[in-house]
Length: 272
Image: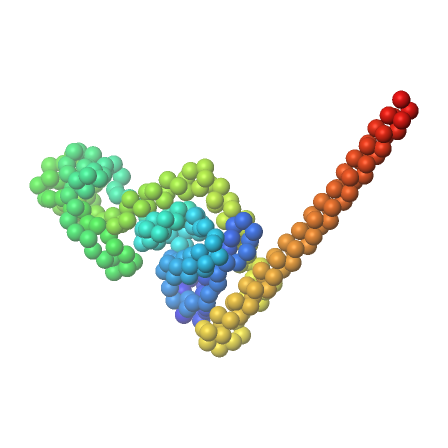
């Protein structure tokens, strides 16, 4: 059962696919149930694709995806296997309260008034299912603070907030996404990866699955991907044939030109 804001709840299959940004070729596709988020399927897709590329001696360096695949766990996972991520963070990400400075060595925050807000514990947020770190000050620190109302609100007596456990991984990824190379990668994703899924749904029969069971749905998705890649292959072969024919034609004219130049040189020599 898939649930999406602004759309009716219904039974769906989720198609996770990966595309080579160089030649628009589908490198992996698989059917999943649509009751989870995209980012929960990224490690499975990456593991399967990476072993396949290694088998054919292909080196994979960059992982480009949209915001739906953003999570601290994914950033950490990709770093561990030496893949460089270019995945924009989701809008709910916050690296800490405004005006608070994070001390990496001591792992505590310093508030605008100079008070230290220490780290307390790591916990699992039951709402999002993600690991977070809790930072909490004491009552006496905030009791006579001049910005107490704006900082704590009406009911709180001490400063307390949580930050994602993978803050460092988020910040490294954000720096890459906001760089010139990150903007280039975003353009590559929008021009090469996203149109592929539209082609599969509009022209390759993936708008609706008319089979029963996820195994059969997986077969349908694979057949659609095969058809898509075959069309790409035929265009490549046709282009290669044309380029080879053009190359042969150029070579023929060069030989003829050389032959004429040689004959001209010989005839001039005879006249002399």
